[in-house]
Image (cartoon, rainbow, N blue to C red):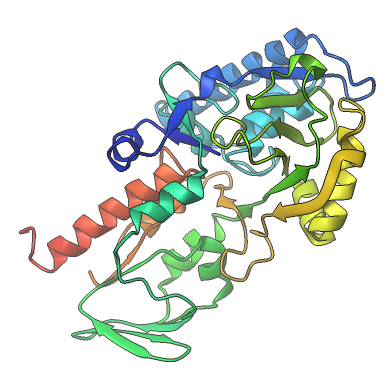
Length: 384
């Protein structure tokens, strides 16, 4: 289950995909040392002050021509570097859509935040949860399309009358192609371009490193959550630890509303450097480590675990090589550069090309639509 922006909501409705408003999901804050409910006021105050400082600095950069800087510079200049829970604020305000505060472009953040709601904040009627999971929704969009899997692209040759795409087992030719490989894959050179990518594209790829996030789903033989921290039976609850160190956010009673008889599930979300550490452990060891953090607010959670774990592997997967992109200071325009086609034959698409919704699925969707229209226009289908 993940939130879907309202610009994709009509499609979900047309396909009969069940959703619910994100603001309706209960959120609880707890002290990870005691496992008891905690007053979120100091955290929310720091969150609001940091968001305001970043937006003000972004406005000065974007509108007044001030030089771009890192998010950490803005936080320091605003005197917030020692504010309560500032590390957690950096994680939930910056890290969930970008990179570390020390290397995250403020201009890039501003481009996101002025159009999209701040992470962790769900304005009414803006974001909705997909009850069967975002993956099921995306898969339904591809129903009936001739998609060929297990055919990694090795090279793309362009510049002639046709574009040649070579995979591990076959060669294809077309008048134009749209490339949706991640920035991590493109920057690694896993796909060889001939002619080589121009220096401006190489520089743009280098200016958009990939951040990491880790999600793991655990199943339980019984429900150890209900009644703790106000958790409501039969409903998903988001449990946020108030701590200055990186600690997972827990989404408990996952799928409880869509599949009430399927059992009890929890998803833990880890951001930043700890995401790499968790992924490197492997699902079973990562599950054990995360359960040790969950046992304080939810006594008995370890004993109730059924031993099953399903985890993401975005950082180590050779076909992703990261989770989502962030722009380094002074390089927010790299997203615009990559949106320019090569010889009007090779078009790029993906979340990295979105100015206002990078790091999000609907940002990738919007860039794909733009690339498709551009490719069709280059073929003369839509006119000049």
